Length: 297
Image (cartoon, rainbow, N blue to C red; front, side, top):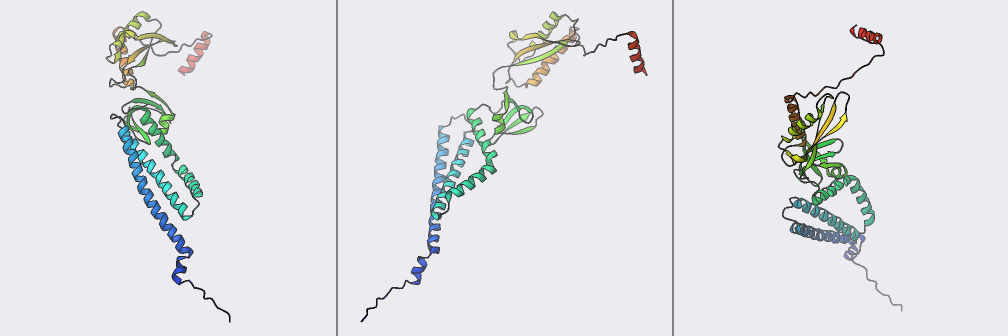
């Protein structure tokens, strides 16, 4: 007599638990829990790094709080991306494909911002420029003014006409920049012309005395006056003198004041500063008469 063996039929609940839907749902729940835990850890790590930066910084460093906040944010967001990648890997997504797509998109969208932030960190740490420095930068045009604010992504300067110019930090580190107030002393030059018939020795002495009357001229004994060029109707001389860029006077104003002093001194000493003139020579008197007749007509 044949023996029949009973086969256990799985219950509906067991079938449900073994289904792909439930398995995938459990993976998602586990990934979400892992992401939440990693996000909390990321925040703690970013806060620790920020506190360490503030602790190690010098007390006089006014920008360290901005740098600390920036590094905190960068660290946190990098760890956030890592946390989501871990979650995606747990679920079964292709993390490297996602990483490549996100990286390329982020680079296209934020490359200018990222470069400006890196440049801002370089400026704040190297301290090539400081608040209050007077600079001349050759960007899309030449800007001359005082640095009013240095941020992570841009630098603000106030020009002579009181305009506020916002310059990206990448431009600050890649353009030609002349600093003026960062040095204890700089050389300024004033040029003046006088006629060929003037007493050159007297003109030089008057020019020296006039420039040295200015309070902003330092090391007056080293101030030099020298011949610069022979022009069409005059001789050009230049005076070069030491100027303290931190005296509170802008260099353009200082040059203007020195030029005015020279002009007043020349007037007092009856020294003429001629206008440019042009001499025309004619081959014959008839040619001269013909030209004069045409002009009169």
